[in-house]
Length: 307
Image (cartoon, rainbow, N blue to C red):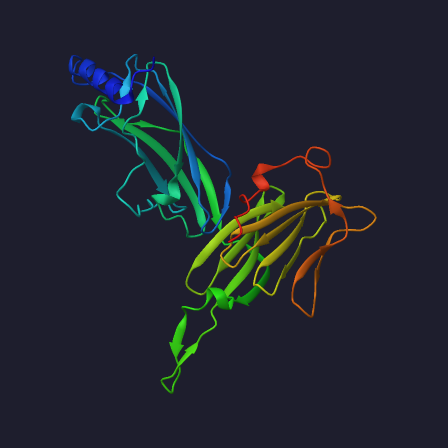
């Protein structure tokens, strides 16, 4: 029978009240990121691994003797500390580290720090607790944030069914509909010797969506086009034979993802000049586990349900 977390916290708190006011503790803390290179405005996650070598169970709670935090320090290339955008810290209340136990924490550090300015950054993590004589610091991690290299761009109008609320007044004072616009940008950044592809949906004020949808494969070139519903269609080579087909809407939501394989014809995007619709011609649908292996890293997300 498992003991409820609140009861366990209370039990540990009771034990702490019987201990000296400060524990001669030892916490090993390791910091890592999933990549070193990121594009501007991309969400960045850090993994913090803590190991409790203090010989005592360590609980994080609201009580004065249980208070503790997971903290970060980030410095730019000039060694200037990056200011926090919120006073909040990653939630630790309710966490219990038993003696000798190791736990992992995934922290969205861009929720707490503004890393949208291109440049190089050094990231460090700290853990503090009321029972520790000092803070315990992790190793240093280094990341690079870049604007990316734009390889394709297209401005599209927001469809009428999404634009009904956007109205303005002309010089005569009469109300008239204003067609809003969005910009689809395809950008790349280097990850080692190869390029990663990103879709950025934005206007002159706001970035609405940013998706990493694949990586460069040899000399094979991706294809991009937009249809009469202002959706972007992307055909990305995964190998000389296999192609991934994406459809994103005006908000950057993935509506479709399919995988095609080359036969006696090569998959290609075709625009119907009369209707403005896009079809994928050539090749045939590939079979998962037979023609290709699914790579979840290159899947932006699951397709949204049709409205």
